Image (cartoon, rainbow, N blue to C red):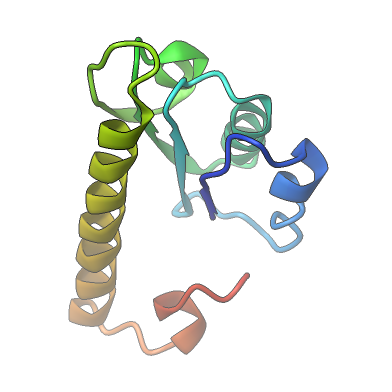
Length: 119
């Protein structure tokens, strides 16, 4: 699951966790401030279900930077949303491309694992 919106309702964000989240599952969470309650709650739920979390943050990293297993932090001044969001978008594309390439290399043929369909 990927969580990106700083303005979504918490229930809307965590609604994607209807299926089983396995130890190998990966959750990527983006929040420029690192303090978006819906994103924080989604990451906590992913960790509770045994998933690995990657946080993409800006400003000072916020709470998201503290709770994720892996963090890509874009150091920036508070209020500089645009440049941080641009770098997050680039990193999202790189991470997704790498994961798809790795799945294909390892023989994954289940189309649900290679698309953005909910699990």
